[in-house]
Length: 468
Image (tube, rainbow, N blue to C red; front, side, top):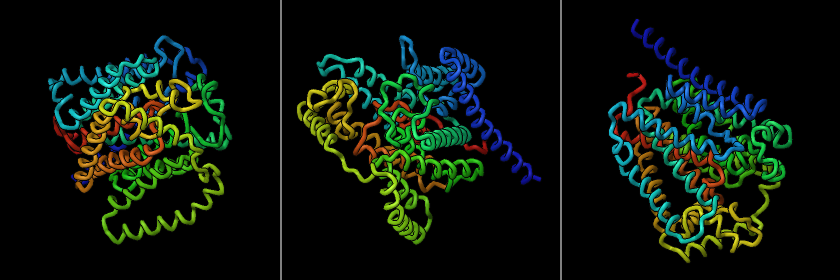
């Protein structure tokens, strides 16, 4: 009888969590339909939904925020980037929740080496910006505001999470959302263009987006952003497919991993594909229990790549191309700016303003270094570069300590964090996406917030799902 009761409770909980993921998907789809039919009403509907959800159950706001990350509409309003403001609202909403629960705000913001490192990085970035002495441009202010909003999302997720059940739901919502992202990418590939639906969702992109070249963007602004976004989710999908005890989470992980891999190929992003290869190697090494199994899978993967590579090269000409030299010019410009300002750089966000003086044909406000290492060195100098990568080093160390844990949820989050950082570091050798893609930037810091809370347990322990 006890076994039957516990099995019933588990099924009930799983069904509830599955219902939450699909409910969020239904609400987001309704908002998208409203946007297509009456764009002027979508903001009103969005605000009403958020207010009602916050009043009834704040969790729904967080789940909806995570689900809708890939969709990033810009409005013809005084504040064009409404979603940037929503990240600030999310932060202050969690602040109010913590005050009501008498949790220490100081502990929330500075209660670990990780959080102090995050604050240090933001402080150095802001200092580099305001002390640069360079006349600021609207693009530089926006980039600094984006960084602050990303960090606020990090703290919001870290402060909001309290149980393994919440982590389960976050993973399900993220996987369902990413399956939708891949599906829309497949639709673009079949249509052979961005599609009318894409331009209904993003009317401003009609004038700004590059001509269609066969590389899918899905709901993101450009193909490399999509590749970077998928690389953040794929480690969680793979870990869920291998480790999850919950059958619905395992199924969503498997579907997301397969769909995401195909979508990655369709982006034709060389950096994205290399990063995905790194994640797959890490998955074989850390998720397979026996050494002989790892060796067999690695060998099989190498053989599969040798067989598939010629087919991919013949199908996608871009994968055969080498860089035309433009990135070398941009990297040289970033190096020159760093050498001129080695300690604090030229100021966070100022690379877009200064680089056109060194790169022929570059447009003010649109160019980044196409390399995360050179971008941070040029923008924030040695101080910002070291602070950022020390943070990532702390997260990698934390993930490696937790990846052999007995708890499946901890292992999934540990590998997800490790894989997301690994893919960012690999893809970051040829791209810098934090300024160009708010979807990527927000998700990256959400992943770090998830890791800080689930793996470190800084202010209070995560409650196991069985206890909830």
